[in-house]
Image (cartoon, rainbow, N blue to C red):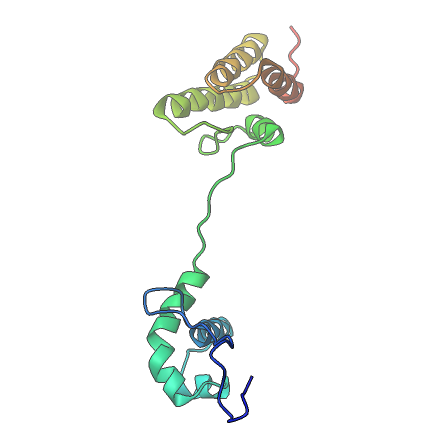
Length: 173
């Protein structure tokens, strides 16, 4: 508010702009978003493009480098792999691909797990190529041994074994 002399009162809130070491200036963030939009449309980011995006020459000179860095950071995402759920474990055990081993929560991929999973995948492939009763039992036993190495509740382990056993070829002697 202005007082009777036309001056701003000291109690009035002034806009708080970030310091050099803190967050990016609001116009810098806007420029970063504009740069991302320009890049995603298949073109580059030219001075003229930023002028057309309603940035002044002074803003472009001041914020271009910081905005480009911010645009790159905003365009990069960190991807983390979620732990496998029961349905994921069953699906992976049914498909038995050596490079897709089931890893539930609190499990990291170790050489022991990779070797055990590889044994199961080989046993499953052998069963599909030459189905006979002993191969089927061996396949289930190897999967059971792999699941024993994982932090699973017994009921979940039994559910996985039952679901996988349903999809294995039925062998009659």
